[in-house]
Image (cartoon, rainbow, N blue to C red; front, side):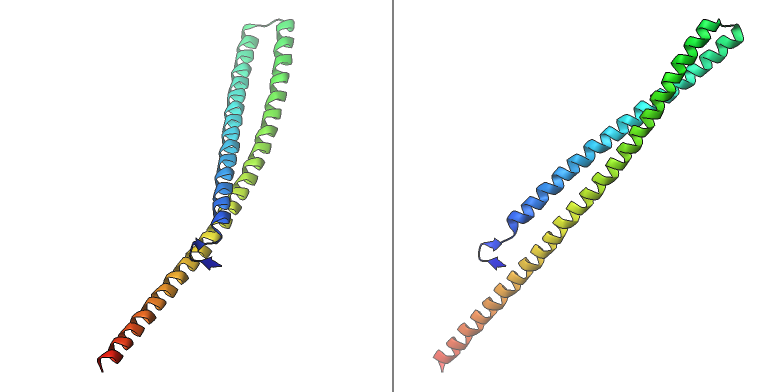
Amino acid sequence: MTTKKGFQLDQILNFRKEVEKMRKIDFAVAKHELDDANEQLARAEYAMLRLSEELRKKQIDGISALDLQLYADFSHRKREQIVEQRREVVDLERNVAEKRETLLSAAKDKKVLEAFKERKVQAMKRDAAERELHFLEEISVQKKGHRT
């Protein structure tokens, strides 16, 4: 698994880091789209509320049948738009959840490989330390042998 050059799976680790980075971007884009859709929905609902209040005031003051029909038609279209916007928000929430899961999976894959790399690096350090200790012991034995 390891060589004197280092960790052989560095290319895979780098790839997994890039995948995670792309998944973060995908998640951020999806979250931004959801936030925009929620904001648009809130504006539409607020506009509908204002329209209802305006119509109520006009009914109190007196409104012609033609104007009442125009308000009713407009109100109906706005309600349909709000229903459609709510569907879009639900779809975008589902998309964000999927992107979050994909991101978590990519992060997990990267962490697994990073942990594996760390174990390999520690093993290489232990091996090097053992070889150095063995080498120093060998030198020590040879020096003692030359003195006697």
